[in-house]
Image 1 (tube, helix red, strand yellow):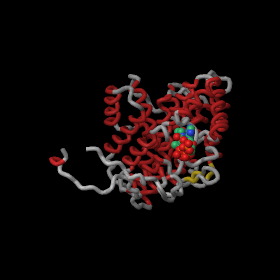
Image 2 (image 1 turned 45 degrees about the vertical axis):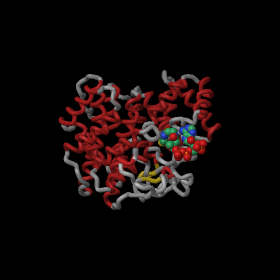
Image 3 (image 1 turned 120 degrees about the vertical axis):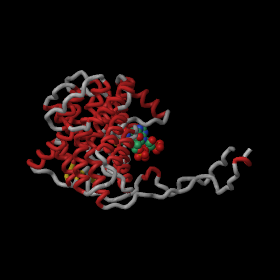
Image 4 (image 1 turned 90 degrees about the horizontal axis):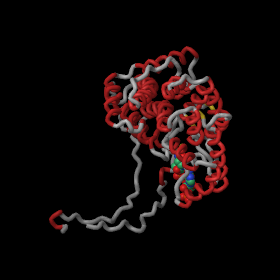
Length: 385
Ligand code: COA
C-alpha cells in the first residue's frame, strides 16, 4: 500500500529545529557567556596551565584542588587506569581479533558498557558513589583506548605509565616519551575539550540520567553521540579534508566544489559561537608555534588559506576541531585516535553533568509537533490486497 503523503502544511512553524536557541535546563558547570568558563574560571588561564587533572577535579568536585587534593586525585585516576577488570580486557581482546579495523570509538563505547556490567552499575547511586565512578572512568577510559590500540596492532597490552593522564596517554599512543612541550600542548587540548555545557553528547548523557539510568549507560550513550561527524567525529574529518585538498593552489576549487554540493567543511561553524570559537583561537596560536620548522609545517599554510577563504566567502570561523586535529597530527598521533582522545577529556564534563542532573532531576521529555498523514482507518491485512 502506498502511504498517503504528509499534509502540505507540515512546515516546521515555531518548532526549534535541532533545539537551536532553546534553553533546556540550568547548569553550574560551565558557561559560554562572554568567554568559555568552567565553574566560573575563564578558559584562558586554565588552557595555559594545561593541567587536565586540575580541570577534571574542578568540573567533578566544583572547586580547584589544593596540591594535596590534586595529588590524591591523580593517584586515584592512575590506580583506576591500572586496574581494568581482566574480564573487560579479555572481552575487548576477543573483539579486536574479530575486527581489528573496528573504530576505537566503538571499542570505547563497548568498553565503558562492559565496565558498567562488571562493576554492577545498574542505578544512580549516592553523590559520593557517582563521584567515585566518575574518577574511575577518568582513568579507565584512556587505559582502555591504549589497550585497544595495542590489541588491534597484535601487541601485548602495555603498562600504564607513572605520569599524569596527558603525558601517560601520549606515551601509550605514540610509543615515545613526550617532550615537555608536547605534553604541555596535549594537556591544553584535553583542557579545551573537557566541557562545553549542553552540547549533543552531554545532553544525551543528561537525558539518560534523567530517566534514573546509571552513569555507565549515560556515558555509553554520550560516546555514541560524540562519534558523529557533526560533533566529535569532526576532528578526524579535518585531517581528511586537509589531505584531500593537498596543496594551497587546490583550496579555491576544492571549497567551491564543497559549496556547490552543499557539503559542510569540517572544523568550521558552531551552533553557539557565531563569531568564532574561543578555544580554536587559543589552540590555533599554540599549533602554529608547535609545527614551526617541522615537516608538517606545509599543512599549516594550507590550513591558513582554508581559514581565510572560509571567513571571506561564508563568514565562518574555525571551531576547536580545526586546530586540535593539526596538533594531534603534529604530535604523531594516528587519525583514528583523535575523537577517542576527545572522549578521554570530555569524560570529565560528562560525568560532572551526570552528577549535576542526578542531584536535581526531572525527566527530560520534550514534545513534538505531528507532521504525518491525517487520521485514517485501520484495515485488517486480509482486506489490504
Ligand atoms: N561549512 C559550510 N557551510 C556551513 C558550515 C560549514 N562547516 N557550517 C554551517 N554552514 C552553513 C549552513 O549550511 C547554513 O547554510 P544555509 O543557511 O545555506 O542553510 C549556514 O551556514 C548556517 O548554519 P548554522 O545554522 O550556523 O549551522 P548549525 O548551527 O545547524 O550547525 C554545525 C552547526 C557545527 C553542525 C555546522 O557548523 C557544521 O556542520 N560544521 C561542520 C562540522 C563540525 O566541524 N563540527 C564540530 C562542531 S564543534
